[in-house]
Length: 61
Image (cartoon, rainbow, N blue to C red; front, side):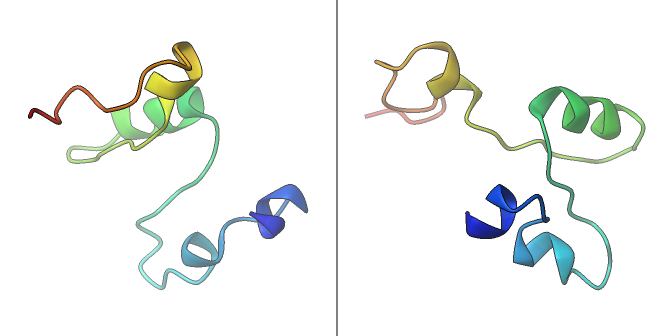
């Protein structure tokens, strides 16, 4: 996370030759995804809302 703390993109995003990855605030990523036909937004929104939340909703035991 040092690159991000220095205001740079993560290495995987920076070096992606197809420019298919983006990194930023979840709100900006959602807007970017809405402009495309197929996209996925990954984030830690569950943990930001409720610190006691331990697993994403798609994990079932």
